[in-house]
Length: 475
Image (cartoon, rainbow, N blue to C red; front, side, top):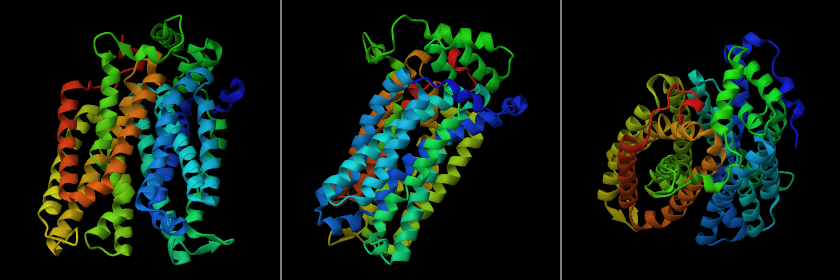
């Protein structure tokens, strides 16, 4: 599994590397995994109805088909760290690209619901792997002064992937007249929504051949000359030996990293691993993915037309991209912790407003009837919630997960935290349809409470990591 030649393709202009351009290019390629992660998880949004009709699926089976990718993602996330420590970060990126490609073609051509679910799970595994490897790799190749911005590229790629998949869904749906009508080659439009993912999957696989292996991984497997060459290309010749010594110091142990390293005597897990898991779970428990998986159905449920509901969903996706850019611009200046606290406050207020509006609206045939004013306020609150999340918890959690863990346990701890995130995402995704039928006011009240608790959690437990070298955080 040698990646011997992979670092030769770094640009030869050393000055370009030192200004950060080369690092930006490398981080952008790694973040492409995030784009596929966003595309794969949201593409089902426009296809759900058509899949249900095509395979005569009952609501429970359909709900499982939507959530099945998340099961794959949890498994992929749990195993990615182990493989990344054994075979290298780049090998795992290529595996993720192959899983995405298999899923795109398999889901698009699936003859029945069972096979569709199988290929969704395979794609989900790719998502899980990408969710671990991109933040770990980006934090390991980035200089401390711009690490927050570069690690935020992962979230920018995720939200762009969500937006592009919704746009692709919209285009296929519009041209064919409906997701269930034929688009080309005798295949329905919804099938092309999945098949289209093969293009970014191929791009990710091919571009991963053009970036260097993580120097911290190379030091861990005693390939010091290669690590030295990459570090001097990334950071300049100055201080490379000190850097390598620091990395070796933090890796100093005779045994291979394993799950056991995450444990601690009194608390079950090392405190930093608990913090990573807490960040992951709260990021999902505020209900952000309800907006992206179910928003079209949600807005229809409160009286908007199908076409308008779809437009609202696409607008929310654009808002998410723009607010992620705010986080990228501010994270290395303002810091991680203040952004999270501002985001928690904003989410608590906006979700509380949505809970109040949905909870007090008159219900007819199980559907809350919103007046013009209430409907407008709910829409504004939903998009302000996306703003609060997009500028804080969306990108900052991935940045912290990539940089908070000590070198020796980074891949394993990230795997564990990311798997927790996928399980939390699955729980929220699966429970929402039932909660919606019970009471939308209650559902949003629960997410609002979680937003409040997320702020208290950050205030008490999360440490600021702005501007620190990875090696200095735990020494």
